[in-house]
Image 1 (cartoon, rainbow, N blue to C red):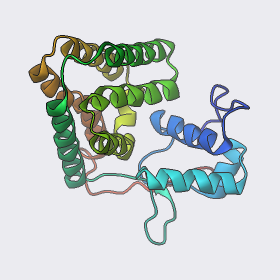
Image 2: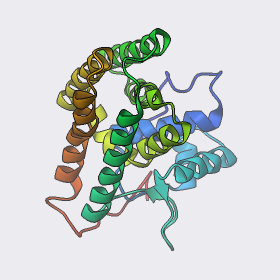
Image 3: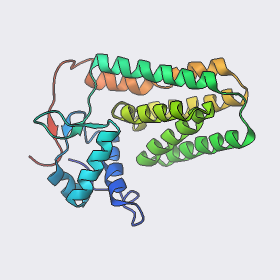
Length: 237
């Protein structure tokens, strides 16, 4: 059963739809909502203290981002990738990342580098505090700053959308202390490669950086149980 909405998420100034999205993200990261978990509106309304139209809007946005799918006769659920889908997704992400690195003019101008360094610091601070939703969001912000250096808005937007699409996989790297520490170290190495105009190292890191969370996901959902389903629901049956 999902956790109550964290106090840091349920702020009065936050739009209620954003608050529900953030609460679902947090419960995915914590492993309280698993892949193929059914997201039942009545349960979400109770668990997150939200109105039906708010829950529906949150699910619609997560469906648009590819995090939630609606298989026939099952309703909304968190996406689960099989081995082939995971391979195709990560092959596509690798192509996008490497294309962005190839387009970057390094080193960037001082303002762009300063913005990247601030994004690095924000992720490090969120990681030190253990704020899961802040870790996830600041990680995505770091990626936006980094791959935005390609100065191709369409490529950068494709990377952002694939970041969201892969969230059900990447979530397992947020709550894992070793994976999070490795991510922070790799972010720092990426920034240093940008400073030094080391495109070769940045190209390598842009692909390697995706590996840890993927391996955690494979160990949890593919290696021991490939082909099986573990249907669950959010809330009491």
